[in-house]
Image 1 (cartoon, rainbow, N blue to C red):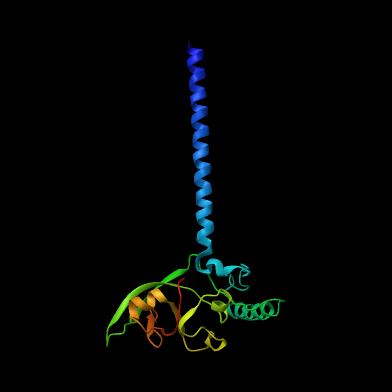
Image 2: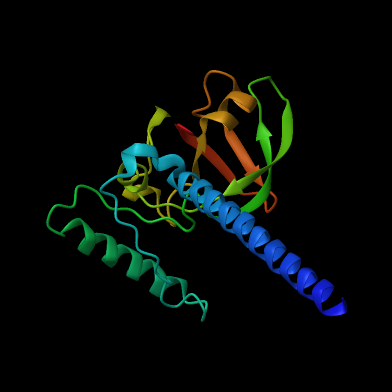
Length: 191
């Protein structure tokens, strides 16, 4: 009798393990599909034909910023010369990645009123928005003149623009915690 009940117990455990494994496989498949859809992010169906390369900027670990800037400039120049390349740009963190956030003081559209807000921050080159086909719906995209030595400028997304500035964000200013003031030069569509 003990042998029969032990065999039934083992069979029940095996059935339970197979059932649990099946549920986990189905859940994994659904998660993989959700991730694939999520990775399309801002690119949506317009992202077809976009090549993405993840590169560690030379000099980053040593704190050699000049070496990194030269590398980025040269890499963009070479990428634009590739056969069939229509545009090239770089960004610190891809749209679906985890960027850093900062607290900003925002000059609202109302006279003399300021707000503090936390926003995700990313660094992008001239050509980035064109390359990923992210529309600039107000103002302009970055140009070569907007580099590290230029006037501090920023492009915000349409959600932030509507929330803090209403219908017109270009020309407004935001200030980071170090006191650097950025002029809003463009508003990007958030898809």
